[in-house]
Image (cartoon, rainbow, N blue to C red; front, top):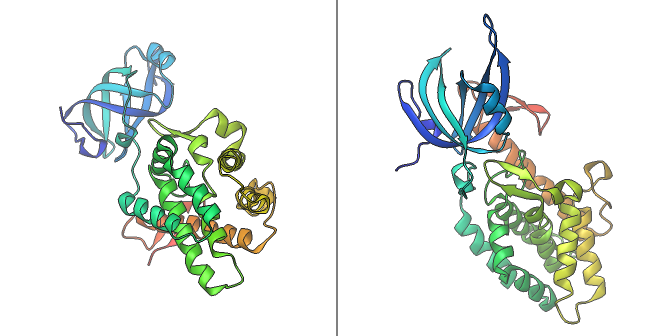
Length: 313
């Protein structure tokens, strides 16, 4: 059976599909005793509201936000929008492909090729050995290529971590040509590695969610731990190079108030922080412009991550 996506639902359709439960609220009837369940369901193409009129208390108790749910419903028009009149909503316990529910970044095949070319371009044999070892591990490589770079702000897509890391590393390669005093290999390697902890910080099911490790440690600490364990497996890895790479991971947010344990203390670390910020902001501005609701307006609505409206004219 062909999967049904949110953006395909039209009033009058019978809906039988699988969606992510984004929001649930138990609300009272206005003019009668009892409650109904209001939900927001979603997939990679968008979201749709739904109402369950019977058995609302029981359904609300057994479902939680983030569940993947099988829904049977009738699509109706309400206040100019599509709404689902739900007949049944049941949690799906089987393994589901997160690509149904979370959009994927574009150009993933090209990003993988760029990653391998950047690693191969390293002249420092210890750095090349370290990155080759790390990215030759099947489980880590697959996780790195699928992970998002964030839960909501920048590159919050399947494969977002790969695209963000490669873009920052390519920018680092270009910047190093203009600053000959910078260690090009160190800067490029640090750029590839700076967010590796995000393979442990996030999991993808119906949405991008933080793991327990992500909540308790965060990607900076997790990334430093991952990197240090990988360095231990490279024979005679220089101690000063180890300390520099670890510092680049723990300082790449740049400021203490941005959860950076240390501020950048040498040139390559400082450049990495700026390049990381550059790519994150470029993605947020471009996505804000592309995703604005009123395409006829030259302005977006308020963009939380940027704390401003964005001009698109």
